[in-house]
Length: 158
Image (cartoon, rainbow, N blue to C red):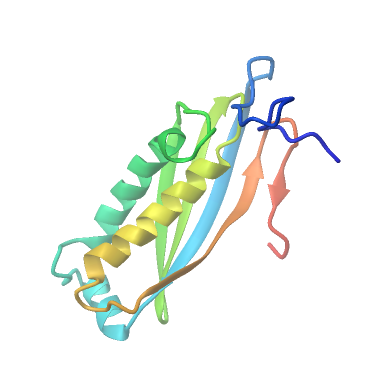
């Protein structure tokens, strides 16, 4: 069996030592989707949601969450992100969020992109739940990552 990187010789959890790794430009892109009623989608599109500008708040929340990933996910390195961006696409029955995180560093930013997109979608839910409590968040996944020792990767089918 392959050695697990987050366990020491006694099987205890540990943070991976990245001290000897080379710096490299790293980028990760993640996406997710929230489905909702036409009423909720219209309120968000038209800026009429009771709590204000839903997508602006969701964008800020996602960026802030990416910066705190190391505090939220056990054994995840705290990173000095250089950029985090979140884009939204209004679709027929929902909203797709896409987060991109990047830095020049010794470890990847996949978790930061995933946390950003998840938090952005949760914020949309929070800000529109008075219109539609039955919204569903899903399809959260890593789309691609670039850089690092393992090289570039894209999700199958992209």
